[in-house]
Length: 242
Image (cartoon, rainbow, N blue to C red):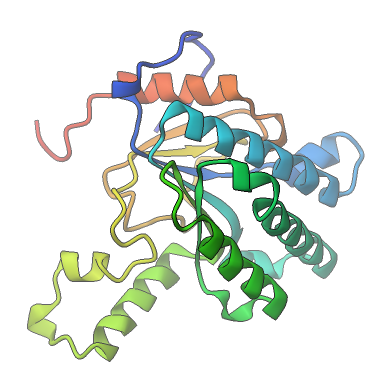
């Protein structure tokens, strides 16, 4: 795994783009700290960047975009910060029901919703229903999500469905993941200079390419995304072959 530097400026042709992109939106707190601002300010700016990048991915023809918005471990953060993130989620959900209705983006939420406030769960369901017939990009927003928890959830569903041990296959597990029916992840992108997967899309990214970039998420731009696409296009994906 290698930290990718800024090189290419031209857009990658459509046929060389990944079908499914996963982004770990990291660095909001550090961005705010560098500016002497509260961590919540970083999350506000990061949320704006998320909306910009999501719309750009749709315009570029990305089939599926999955963003890591709130992990199962994020509950350990200070309560004020958690409350701020949840309020931003509320704002996004309300926006997706108004401004985003003009976008051809199908919105889905992956993760365990049971710990979320009832009004947030209701807004999630409403946003999913309102965008269900969209034909453009599928946007998965991972909220209270963890890759290990997702696999446990899939196995428990297998057991509840009465699947016998000898009938458990990779396909059977995949069909019970939150992303069932979607293509596997081609590219995992993590800004902020960190080199970790952080319990994100563990099953789906088995053969994904990883690009780590030394830019904090609130500073992330469409140009940075194109540079990540350029790095992805240069990779020789062998899927275990020679």
